[in-house]
Length: 185
Image 1 (tube, rainbow, N blue to C red):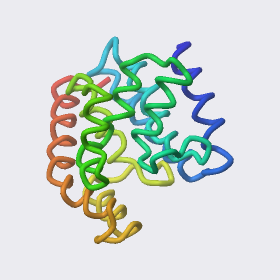
Image 2: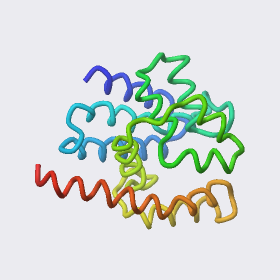
Image 3: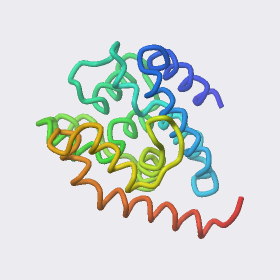
C-alpha cells in the first residue's frame, strides 16, 4: 500500500490543479487497474501505481520533450528514484513506441527503457483504453475514436492511435479473456 499511496500523492500534486481532466482520467485508469487484481495477484499494486502515474508526463512541471511517456518515465527514474518496473510501464504505456516513432523519439525511448512484462503492459493498455478522459468506462473503439477526434486524424497522436487501433482491440480482448478465465471475484 505504501507504493500506491506515494503514487497517488505524486500524481495528484502534478495533475490535479494544472490538468484536472487528466487527473480524472488517471483516477479512472487506476480504478480499472484495481479491477484487474484477480488476474494480477502480486503485481496488482504495481499496476495500480503505474496506472495513476501513467500520464504525469503531461504535467507542465515535467514537460521536456513534449512526449509524455518519456518525460514522465525520466522524472520517475531520475527525480523520484521510483521502482524500475513502474518507470518502464509509464515509459511504454499504450503503444508508446508507435507514438515515439511518429515523433522521431523511437531510439531514445527504446534504448533508455526496457519493455516491462507483456501481461502488465497489456493490463495498463486495457486500463487506459477503456477509460474516458473524464475517468468513466468506455469501449476501446470509442476511446480510439475520441482520441482521433480530439487531436485530429492528421496529428501525431491521431496518426499513432489509428495505427495502434488493431493492437488496442487485440490487447483489450486478451485481458478480457484472462478476466473471463479467472471468473467472478
